Amino acid sequence: MGVMSVTTHVRPEDLAVVAEARGYGLVMDQSKKNGGREDTMKPMEVVLAALGGCISMVARGQAPLRNIDVRDIGLDIEGDYTAEGFQTIRIRAEVASSSPREEVEEFLHFVESICPVSNSLKADVRIEVVMRPKNA
Image (tube, rainbow, N blue to C red):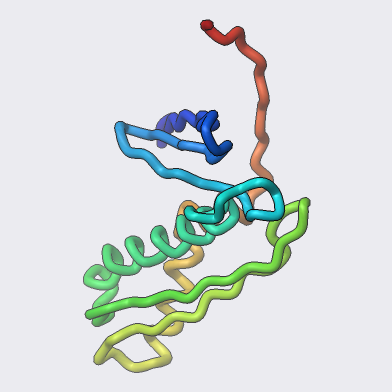
């Protein structure tokens, strides 16, 4: 599709990380036991939030194309993770809809299957780390 760029920097005053993309910012921090202040989301929570946001947006966009009534959608997402990453992610959906429950459930499975964030979590993604000089 294209290339996305996100820049991250550690805030020197408290070690939180500031991520910026297209002029928008997001602050993430660690737990208190790891030296953080715990006044922002943690990186793994941001991953779950991105998944929920993507599924919600795809559902709202696809619903009219598939004749599914979606007046409102709410997702509770939790995940079990280790240092290796997420082992299981559970999504509980509440959908305000006049469409039959079975059709809405089938639709949600379809939405999850085409959600780019979901597919990225399930993919074998190559990550390259390249050191570059820092301008002082």
